[in-house]
Length: 499
Image 1 (spheres, rainbow, N blue to C red):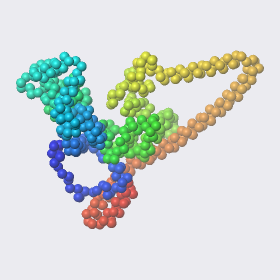
Image 2: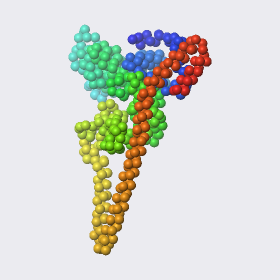
Image 3: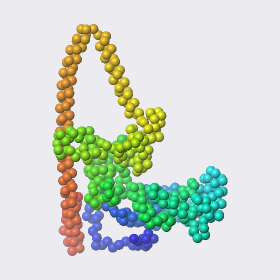
């Protein structure tokens, strides 16, 4: 792999013999280009973004990585904050402001640097602790184990000037990597918000931990990047990049269903490169061009139908209940919308992905629960509604019983006759209602069978369509080299018609 410093000196490769995708596809088709990325492709994309940002802002690569990570790897967002206040931008990212950032400040660069380096000491609430740490720095005492560092143990220096022995550094970094918090490792000093450089991490930990750190780093790069998403297929390990992304996360799509902002009417079906097709917006099963809101309504409609009714009505619809098991037996996280299954434990749930604490019964923030909701591990929000309905039913029954007791025998006879008439009418209504339910079920089975047929046809025709596209591109390229412009343009027009 080419070092990042050498990538700044590399020029652009000659692309005269390659096919120009902008000529092969129109403006609308160009926006629908999705590229599957492997692990090495993700690393190269990240390195290229770091080098370009470093050259643009004239900052070190480590500083560029920290700034991009703090701004969700969006260079546009970073540039906007950098133009307003570069020093504050660096402080929020946990790095020391470089020379290019200090040039925009009013005070002298040396004064700003000294003030920034001593920021943690000014924030200390206990003067005795501050004096102790200052004494340790002057006598080369580790601030964790409080032992003197031997002369052969070279101190690890970072921008905050906190000193720790190599053993404490290695233990601290190893625990951080094992806990999965590898993408944001801060200095172990008390109330210090300086990031530990990648070079120090790879130097102090074991080779196995270094490889694991790189894996967590790539994972954090994808999950915090709006234009790249992992393939949801278990064990795939590939990602998909959308060049012209609409900056919409899955949580934004699902949250917009219950908010005032209307969800998008269409969706995008993407391929990770391994033949796994999924929806770019909701990361579920590919359902383009149907919008995610309509697709969610369709899944809810299917989940309302009982599996035994589907199995008794038509054998082809039996897998409807199987493929929608996720909808019936799980709930989405209120924060990140990741599906969660509860098979044991109390109602206090914690999402393993976003670490959000919520109640399994009402899906509200766990901080809202206390003794007022029936206990910390019991939610009576829904029980209150059921109790109100039961109380209303009891009041109606008492009122009817009181009226029946007050009437005389003649009125009771009339009431009995009326009851029999109403009972026969209710039986007729039940028959009509049952007939309507059967019609709704038949209508559902009609559309569901056609939906599955179209889906199977798409899976069978997708490889053939891709092969035709590749052959037509090769033919257009060969005609372009031979000078036959008219034939090449005709093939390009045919490709645009197919796609």
